Image (cartoon, rainbow, N blue to C red; front, side, top):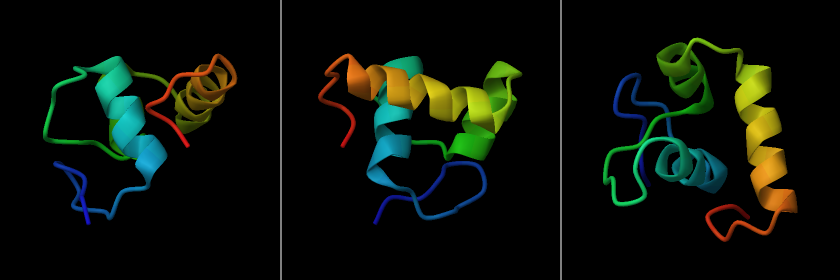
Length: 63
């Protein structure tokens, strides 16, 4: 099971997809929603909204 590079929280598939979509598609180190939000200076809600948008647009990085 993958873990957040910063806080070591176990990650859901959508968190892995968000890291790949927002940081680098080829990365092997991933961030949880909380740490992604801190990195980009936005709320966790905003990251989750982005995930939903990517899913609705058919991005295959998300389940």
